[in-house]
Length: 173
Image 1 (cartoon, rainbow, N blue to C red):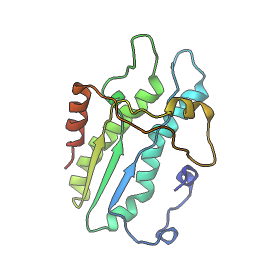
Image 2: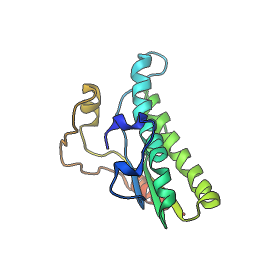
Image 3: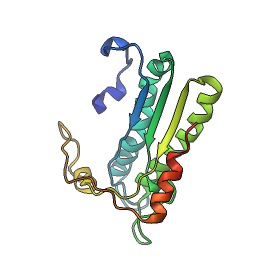
């Protein structure tokens, strides 16, 4: 699925080879946005729109197919920046952090919504620490026709952040 389909008027099962989905993994994200006070508004909105909008629009688009499944699970990737909004005491990080807080809050609320209105569905939020990728470089380059993988994607985390990741991953119904 390409990002452009977020804004499609409908997501019909005819576009897919199935009437339902059991698993939905939302992992949208770019870095950037910087300062709400001093940086360009369009860059802030681009970062927030991709990071939060990717999760929201994909969940919204696939919800009808999740509801048709006998059971289903939505897994949303946030970030440790969804727990604390800082990458350092002198580095503004408002768009990225606000989006990751939104993903965390949305997922926690979605878990309750599923419990009440769609008990066959479950939700989880994953909140990884720093991942060794080229997200900063790739985010500055803007949209490209297709994604490229750079680096090994190795996880760099402290014991405390690893524990928080484990606790966050267990926030599942």
